[in-house]
Length: 148
Image (cartoon, rainbow, N blue to C red; front, side, top):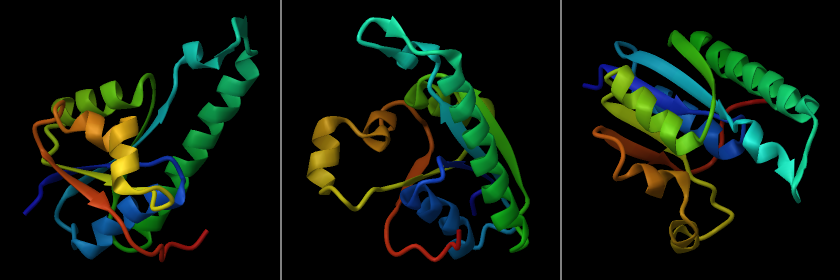
């Protein structure tokens, strides 16, 4: 039985699959956390020029909205969850959060548009986390049942 679960969520269809795994696994006794990672301001530098903080602010607001939607989705199905919107590098943030919260299951989505081998070769978040976390990782795949 998983006691503490972290779902990486960005509002994409693949991350919604990760959220739906909480239902599939029947995690009604678990402490569920949902994290959205917004890249830090360094990512908003384009061709040597700084892109206005407006883009960062928009991404931060979108992440908060996505987290609220995810939290409401689970709550409506009897699964309360805590949310975390954090700025930084996704792999670093997720790895750190799994340790800080003593997570025993990390759930990630998998984009089906590319082959698994292509994603692995390019260095997906899931592959990058394999050596960084000390908990089980579930990669969610399949059809999306969550409504917008």
